[in-house]
Image 1 (cartoon, one colour):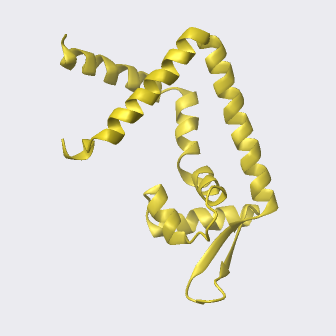
Image 2: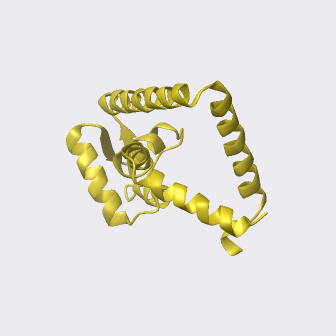
Length: 145
C-alpha cells in the first residue's frame, strides 16, 4: 500500500472540506468567542484571562479584546478575586449561558442532519474511525515525528 499517496489524497480531502461553510463554522466554534464561552462553562474552577489565552492558543491582547466584546454583549463578567486583588475572574452571565446553550443546540442539529445524510452504517464507521484516530494520536508524541 502506498501510504504517501493515501496521505496526499487525505490532505486533498481535508483541503476541500476546510473550504466548506459547515467546517468554517465548526472551526469558529472552537476558536474566538464561542470557544471562550465553552471553556468557562466547562470548568468548575475559577477561570482567568490567562487560562483562556492558554486554552485558545491566542495572545493575551486578543483574549482581552474577545472578553471586551463578550462583556459588551452581556455574556460574561470580569471581577477581581476577593483573595488576590491582582487576579481577574471571568464568569458567564445567565445570558451567556443561554447563548452558549443555543449555539450548542444549533451545532448538534447540524451534526444530526449530517449523520442522517451519511446514513447509519457510514456514520457509525466514521465515529469508530475518529475514535481510533484519537487512540493513535494519544498513544504517541506526534509533534516530535
